[in-house]
Image 1: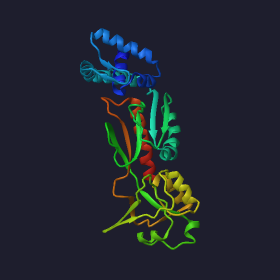
Image 2 (image 1 turned 180 degrees about the vertical axis):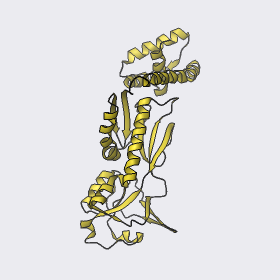
Image 3 (image 1 turned 45 degrees about the vertical axis):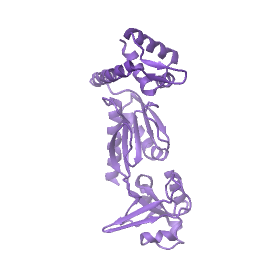
Image 4 (image 1 turned 30 degrees about the horizontal axis):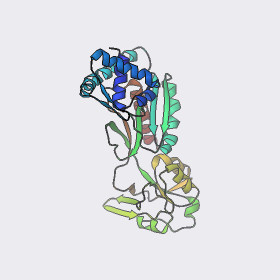
Length: 302
């Protein structure tokens, strides 16, 4: 049996559609249909039950997939291992991240990555929507917030610390912020895409203070909030990756630096996630290792 035919079968089964698999392979649907038909002819049984609206595995197809999928992964892993001994990793690497994090953190690191691995091509997909890694053929996702769920391999890269910040211009004409409770007298700009009232949690020693935040302007886009803070509109609680340079340069002022502040009680971190598979392609592993080294070294130098 042709390995490409087996890979096509697995992809069609995973995506549930010949058209979707054709888009993922940048191929024609008719070509994939012929491959599936040829595979069924070799096996002497139908692998898919076809209707006008739905494509689903037959019992034989489900059994075949469970046995073939690990073999296809092993073939790909063997190829990667063999090539790694004689050449650098290569091929297209699809990476996804949120718009703000991708623009502020991921994109600036790509020049260094491409210089180190010139045979890897990057397709950077920036979206605040939750991208389906399998359906969109994404190799690795960088996600922020609580631990991602779903059928993914997930690893924590680093915790995200948040800074309560404002511009000098804004602070020059408003009451001081000496305690968490003082924010009630200020224009607050919370990061949220929820209609519920935002909640900030302040922790210091044995003190734990939860405050609902009076939101003047709310948005899920971190960089938009940072610009509003820079423009003197109010105060905001923003991740360190978006404001530390502004704090160092004096463009923004950090408020209540002795407090650990979070949005609610959930852990917030940078996570790397990739589809569950029997092996991790060399190009993906190199990207994860490079990215982790870069963001951890930036954290230690801050």
